[in-house]
Amino acid sequence: MELARLFLKLGFFGFGGPAAHIAMLEDEVVERRRWMAPETFLDLVGATHLIPGPNSTEMMLHVGLLRAGWAGLLLAGLCFVGPAVLTTAALAWVYVELGEVPAVAPIFSGIQPAVLAVILGALWRLGRKAIHGPALGAVAAGTVGLLLLGLSEVSALLLGGLVGMAVLRGLRGAAGVATALLAALAGGTAQAAGAAAVPYSLQGLALFFLKVGSVLFGSGYVLVAFLQDDLVTRWGWLTDEQLLDAIAMGQFTPGPVLSTAAFIGFLLDGWTGAFVAALCIFAPSFLFVALLKPLVPRLRGNPWSAGFLDAVNAAAVALMGVVTVELGWAVLRDPVAIGIGLVSAIAVLRFRVGAPWIVTFGAVAGLLGAWVGG
Image (cartoon, rainbow, N blue to C red):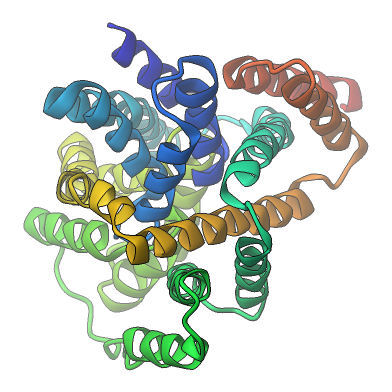
């Protein structure tokens, strides 16, 4: 089945985090297969950023749902998430048995700059569709400024959407109202005080990851804060070293970063813990996507909500741009990485080479670079 093949491919080659996953998905379903218009894809991107859960996983679920109904939603989710969960759990087994994981740094160091090129290609295509006109250009620029000032991703998207909607509909003096509303939405959050260590239980593990999957906004990297606060500091289920190793494995493996949950579940309760943790952290996304599906067309059908969605789309592209710059600053630190990035960018932008081939090239080039340098 074509749908299963597509999402398995994205699951196995989906390195680089949420921005890269969305870029690969756009290349497959908009550019190559023409399953949906760029405008529809952008609407889904903007709406998905405003609900809890891993953005890229929810985008896969949306496409599966639109393409093949409820069966498509389940198939897309399992095929995209499955490879990441199984690979991460297998690495956890190696970690428990050997006390360490095999060295994969050369492969990952080559994949990272290659994935940057994939994101750049999607940014170029989506940006041309989302930022049409000076008003939406101003929304995108303002979003970049808010993110640089330290505002959270969701808050910046909400503020950009509200102000952009007001400007597009010709409403004056809306910036102050939108800012006040945003402050009401984002303010007043307080963290629980540190508590004594509590005994581990499988039920507690399930409830923890179910909670995280239900409230996690923005990129999967926000997961680190939840893990540190509860599993390490408050409950003492993991050590700092184990947490760092778990996070590293979530980034080394393809697919969503939230597959880190499977690694942690395995450390705490073997294969049962890995399955329960992965199931609970991803399950809320299936529900949120199902609830959001009928709302997106209605948003587009109303002039006010359509303006909001246009502004959120422009803000989402700006968010992807900021993430790309941050990743580029962290990744392009040596001649090998820069060379891989340049070759990959030319292949993507000039010759429209598909993401799996780009990722494969990056992995091979990273290994060769390490071999020559070593």
